[in-house]
Amino acid sequence: MKSIPKLIRRFVGIMMTSVILLIVINIIFYISIFWKYATHDSAWDIADKAAKSIHLTDNGYALSDEIVGELKERNVWGILIDDNTREVIWHTEKLPNNIPKQYTLSDISDLSRGYVEGYPTFTGKTESGLLVLGYPKDSYWKLLHASWNYDFIANLPKYVFFALCVNIFLMFIIYVITNSRLLRSIKPITNGIKDLSSGEPVHIEEKGVLSELATNINKTSKILQDKTEKLNKKETARANWIAGVSHDIRTPLSMIMGYASQLENAQGITEEERKKASVIVKQSNRIKSLINNLNLASKLEYNMQPLMMKQENVVAIIRQVVVDFINMEIDEKFSFEWDTDENLLVCDINLDKDLLKRAVINLIQNSINHNDNGCTIYVSVYEDNNDFIICVEDSGIGVSDEQIVKLNKTPHYMVCDNNTTEQRHGLGLLIVKQVISNHNGKVLIDHSKYGGFKTLLIIPKSTCINSK
Image (tube, rainbow, N blue to C red; front, side, top):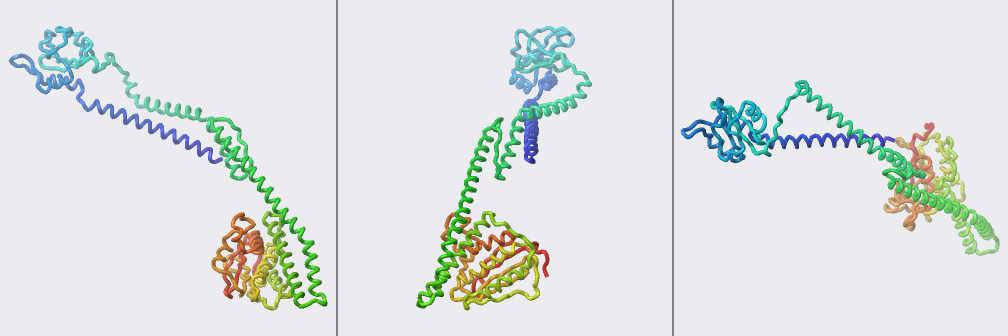
């Protein structure tokens, strides 16, 4: 997976950033420490200044007041050793008692680079002799036998850089080794999350540093699988229940319709009784249509209705539906208008002929069912930009703007468990939407220019095989 290298790069980036930051912080720290002590005059500088300021007076040798004050502030004592006699010919006040007053050449050699009786000493050359300043025993540390090979000093920067690189490499190796268990644990976790998002069952071995996370993912997978199983059982039960009810209702409904039709045509009954029988027949037909719609909608919803896709001339199919309605014995209050461009004769589309006919029939039947006072139903087929459109509209009572919004945006009650009382557009329109969706199209509901209701079935031109 791409996430593993990305995670490794992130770890390495964090490590390298940490190392660089640590180095920078150390450099800043040591520079600040060095600057703190380097800003003051060094002991050698003070010794040189004292040697330059010492002078002979009527009362003997003396230092300038500035140097005297600085030596007292640092608790430093001083002596002046004569060049010829190598005796101390001058010293500061409060000279330690154990400081010698006579020196040999070897003593002077030692004190010039080291100590006198444990006191770190620094020297300055004067006209009369050697000025020696002694500092408190715990103030300076002096390296007595320092000597460095010249090649070592010349190559020191390279050695330091090499040592730094080796240290960084070792830190990286240590980091990788210590985090290898984590990296090994990450891959099954990421694979498990990927499978979890796709709905597949997941089981990750619960070990390693991420064992707790693996346990939670396994629990989540089990919960999701249980819910999916229950949902599938629920959907199967609902589909079987609808199919069963539809089958069980057909037989008594057929009997009701048969007897009602006999009563409607029977001799010797009053006109009022004949009308009642006619109403029974009409409403029974509506119930039969509703059952058929319910059964088809359920099959489409759960992908139980196989699509018989074939190249068909959609213009001829829609024209035939209109002709069939005209030839039916429907109320004279309803009339039809074929409003398709005469130049659009053929458009072969890969579709399910029976389902598309059912969708258009439902739209026309809706116009008939919802306009008791009658209306004109207009059916047209046309091309628009990249779409092929089937339009069914009427001059009936129509619907409000609020209802138009709901019909376009509100889910149907078969796919929504709540607020079912607000879903009023019925199974007929649901089937239309399902059929067109299976043909990669969409349904748009709007007001008709004739004052009633309009439905557009929009199918992309990419579905068309040949159009002329």
